[in-house]
Image (tube, rainbow, N blue to C red; front, side, top):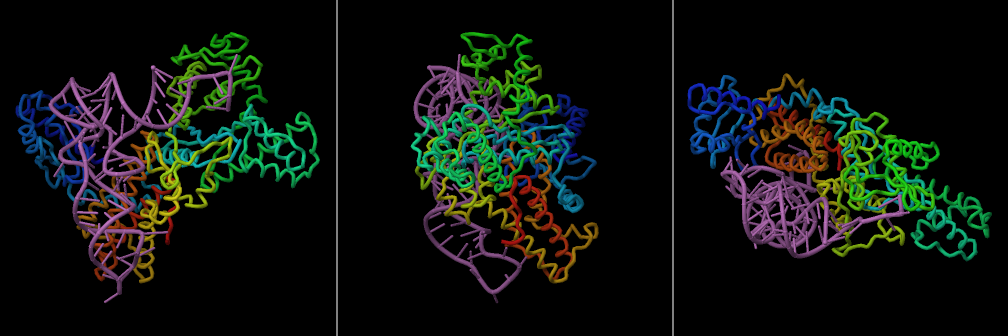
Length: 558
RNA sequence: GCGCCCGUAGCUCAGGGGAUAGAGCAUCUGCCUUCUAAGCAGAGGGUCGCAGGUUCAAAUCCUGCCGGGCGCGCCA
């Protein structure tokens, strides 16, 4: 049982006894007992607001009620409380005896890498689909945010006891892909000295020229002067394969891999699109109008119906998205999570409609909308346009600032908070990036542990260590933060908010650095040294576990 | 015009019903003969966009307004 839960039950027991004695009129009600961790300036482990909640019901001042509960609380048979204090307008501040916190070191020692893992997922299967950028150009910095968040979220859910599947949906079909082929075709012809103009709205980045050059290097000018109709398929397919491979490589350099890459084109080839639409048609969710085929999404609170097959007979992306989600849903996941940029939030309503129309409860799909990344250089906005090829690639950023710094940075913001990415700042301050603060703490501890080993100080079995030697306030503070880790995993996973781990790490590192400066870990006092080494090793373990979830490495030396 | 998100220290952002609102950066002052100074200690810095409302309690929830971002295609 978690500690806050324990306190809550103690409060309820105290309330019960007070009520038995006629000191409080109302009967104990769990809903009225809120136990929270107070802010840092308050010198207590937990606080309850029960007296303030009760005041209007009892018709008595909150402090008076708090006093009553306090006296009963102090008489609790479990005797795990150091003291209970009445504070402010009617808070009851509870401090646990130090030995209540030392236990966590034994847990960490026993569980190691598994410490922090919880079971709230109960093995339920979750699929996280993220990045899923069009393969019409390299990934840019903005995609990095979804990559970092999606990966960390997947790791987090895994730690929380879910079975997680990561997927990249590759939009390797449709007009944009064709346009890429045409763009490369034009560049190829230009290279071959055949003046073909770039397609209107075509892709213009340097990578298009590179793709053309690669092709030229590989097959020579055999397509020179060939009409587009004769060889466009080849150019499209080749460009597509190259781009997809490049994206995959960029993601790998970013430390991110997927369990599967799902091809949009395969949905057309397998007939899945046709089948999905047939299914919807049978349920009368499709109709023809103005020569197009429409999905009746307004039946599920979308603001207008949506076209799935255009007048010209081409399917819209929605058609394949319907098939894709039908496929995902049929794979038996308990939950599908899609991570989308805010530029796609207008599609949420229709996707939710799709889920319902396909006959699944809407809770099956959670779409997380992330606000977009604004790119800034020295405080000046950097314009980004994929078509014009003006953008900073993820690859550039990773090679400039490193993957750890980039990932950590992307995870220092809430998903629905706008993120400003200053390139110069990221480069210039790469040594002051918050990630180094955390990594340095980890490396520092590794160094201490190495030092101990070199001095021939072997860590005794944890059960043999005198934990009661850990009495410094900083030590208690560390143990309390360590103790909070499993709960943090639970809450972050529940809220689908991996960024909470980033802030936890920064806080833990801060306490650690402070402790490190104030106290020597290795000393002549053998019992104390043993106890402190165990503590320090526990901090190291938890840091490594948390960093692992974020997808950031935990270096042993820096 | 309509919809979603945001507005908190000079800057970038945490906190999202509970006490005197926090961190990093920037600015200023100290600390390396001792386990890693990518570190530590200290100082200054705020009408939590504005106005109402709900509540014992509002930065937090509700309404309106102001400001910013993104959407509102038979584009992806």
